[in-house]
Amino acid sequence: MTKQLIAGLVAAAIVVAAGAYAFVRHQASGDASAVAGAGGPASAAPAASGPPISVTTIVVQKRDVDVMLDATGTVTALNSVDIRPQVASVITKVQIKEGQFVIAGQPLFALDARNDEVNVTKARAQLAKDQAALADAERQLTRSQDLFKQNFISQGAVDTNETLVESQRAVVAADKAAIDSAQVGLSYNRIVAPAAGRAGAINVFAGSTVQPGGTALVTITQLDPIAVAFSLPQRNLGDALTTMRAGGGKVMALLPEGGAGVTGRLQFVDNAVDAASGTVRVKAEFANKDERLWPGAFVTVRLAVQTLKDASVIPQAAVIQSPRGKIVYVVDAGAKATARPVEIVYASGEDAAVTGVKPGERVVLDGRQNLRPGATVIERAAGEGGRNGRGGAASAASAATPSAASAAALSEVRRGEAATATRPTPVV
Figure 1: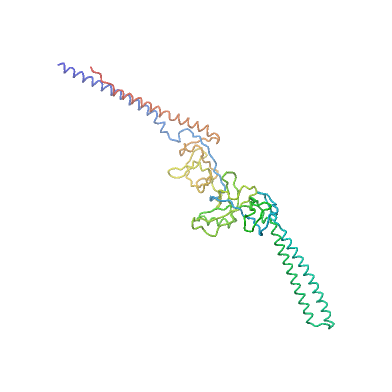
Figure 2: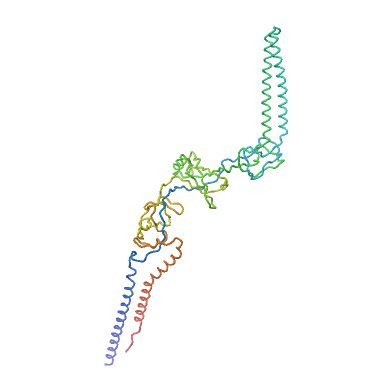
């Protein structure tokens, strides 16, 4: 009898515990449903019915855009001459300084010219002697002709005198040529600049002995104008030839240290493609009065091979890569954002020439990541990006608050369930 009573009490206790658990579970489910009901409609609200989104816009520009080919080039001088003597001699005077700019014909070095001066003097003396002999021969011819007219001498005597005069004239001509030759040799002792340019390092001093095949005395390099040599892929050979036939086009040389580029024109395209590299050598010429380009320096070369007339230009940052392709958000007169598919025709730097938008339309630049098609936008000044960005972050945080509260409420319910499940059953 006692065992049956105890079994009945245990069964009654189990029934009571089960009823309490079901009651608590029902209450928790109701609270979770209430919390979810409070947060659900807000999160499911469409973008168009939400508050205006703060953005900055930029107007699509209409301008001509140059299509550029980029390459790495080397600055080269149009003229660079190594100055060497043409005779073996001794330097008597150095007439320039290192790094000096010289003009064509300016004296550079003087050599020991005493021997050549003597040779010129000897040649002139020989000329004077032979000219005197020629004058005597001409007088003899004149007298013989007079005597022939008076029948005192024969025609043969006259012919002999004529031959003597012609021979002496040839000797005089040879003497004059000898003088010219001696003067040429004398001119080798005066070394002048063959062209305008900048003198490099001077390798000799006064008193140095020099030879025709020895070390260059100095190098004269032309700096203005100057050239940049670079290579283009074989596929761009046609573009380079077309550009050169059209007058050289526009070539930009950009220095590694930055700053404004130098503008020049294409001047040369090689007559063969390098079979080893598949490239063709080309050369552009630049004005260099400010000496920004220096021989041997590396520069980035940009060759304009085509001009896009009246292209629609927008910043590249305004283009969004979507799953269906590139798009931009265009703001209409009603302050609504509309997604517009675009194609990038050519991009350079921060800008891109595109199709799909028209000049004068307003394209969203900042804030595009928060937009959906049909969303209402409010424009802010470009300089207010930081402040509005912080405001946008705060708005996003406040919009996320109901979801956080819902999660907290659900966590409390789950903790209550766990506590009930693990609560020991009272033994009666």
